[in-house]
Amino acid sequence: MAEQKQLDLVEIAPSAKPPVCRLMDYGKFKFEQSKREKESRKKQKIVSVKEVKMRPNIEDHDFQVKAKNARKFLSSGDKVKVTIMFRGRQITHPELGERLCVKLAEQLSDISSVEKLPKIEGRNMVSILVPKLEPEKSKKEEETDA
Image (tube, rainbow, N blue to C red; front, side, top):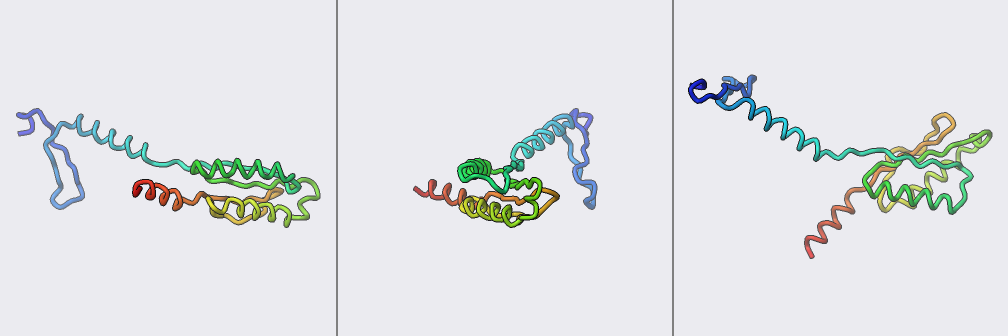
């Protein structure tokens, strides 16, 4: 029957009882399957991690610039890795770095939340901020209601 219609007998669900088969053009089936896979890959959002580096004795304006950059990264949907780099004897005062991480997290609390609390890794203190998604959704809902 498949040969008469110039189609292929394709096994769709081999694990089912009885196995499910269909008469179809196998080339067309493979093409549509690959097309669906490509579309699903396009829809996936790739979250990258951006890094903001600073030292514990950073000046106020420099800190504001770093905070502005972090805000830009978070608003575009990326995670932000905050790295406080200690040099020499600065490592003996980790509370300075922790204070900076907390200050940055507080400044960005409207659009982000802390995924990883400040922790010393070697000569660096690392904290990770992730964007909050709820406020963006509510803004879109308000626009559609109006």
